[in-house]
Image (cartoon, rainbow, N blue to C red; front, side, top):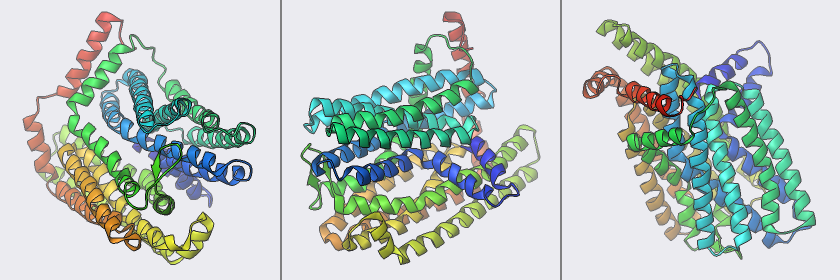
Length: 485
């Protein structure tokens, strides 16, 4: 996201009172688009449809959408994180003709994979076939949106992306409400909701394919290259997969506990826990937006300067000076945004009774809401620290941290469930707090020993291995289909 982040930072620097607000708004859509879309759409559809649609039907629709969102994230995470790594290599080599084939390959792998997994899960839960098929289509479309957003960093067109999400949201809400009024069936409402997702997918894809219009050859070759990348960067792929599991782990544990309920469709959920935690997570949006516009951009500039100094054969003293500046800039940015987010979280905790009314929650959920709000603060620190570790190819550290987070989420949430409803949310809070501090410490140690780790890593690798692999891929393409461009 550093590429589009630079455009947003320029927008926020304009001599205009509305420019910073617009920058944060666009960044929020880019950083958490599917999340905001799903929460907002479900809330609006529920508000407009509750008067003329049975509660069971509306609840079933909401559950299928939530399950589709969760499953799509888990399935696409390893594909998206490796595809982004390969796009970074292509940009570094000025091989922009490889981006379009990689995008198409990621769409195929993610969309088909998410749709198949969702269909299997829904059938296993005993959903009617027509509902399972509708849910599978929704999951596949959300997966395509995740892929599109991951490639949008190279597009730098935040206006079109935001417009696409807003238009898709409007179509999804209007279509779902109209369908619920005329055909109050879960499958029909899901298909109407899908129309909004299709608009978002088409908007993202049109911008990416227009920015990189190079013609494609055989689509199987890019798919093979992406699969090869997943095998090669398996630590990265596994880390992405586990990170997606960890995000949803506490919900799944609660669903299987005393607070869990089984809907008539067969899907499990825990409304008492879920609604409060989903509301609490929205408080993290400002920090994530600032991360896109400030941390990644400022960090990227220093990161680029550091490796440029190495390539230009700077002296060891000069390299270490730039490394020290990189470390200082990184933690200054993280600290500033964390302080802003801490103030937002403290305010949200204090006004939690008012948030309860606005979100339509029950007052007995106020403890869960407050624990979730505080947990979101430390989860941002964890997210920011682990994301920046990837810039230094610390894939093993990334995997270890994500695994630790997953284990703590499961174990501590299970303990909190056994202690009773008064402790719901404490497991997530302690897991986020512990892993956030641990990830920050690992990032600090990585930056402190950056020069040593950089040269040690270089000495263990074959020179130009990534570049040679990509060139060999190009040569195979040209011998068989005339190349990617």
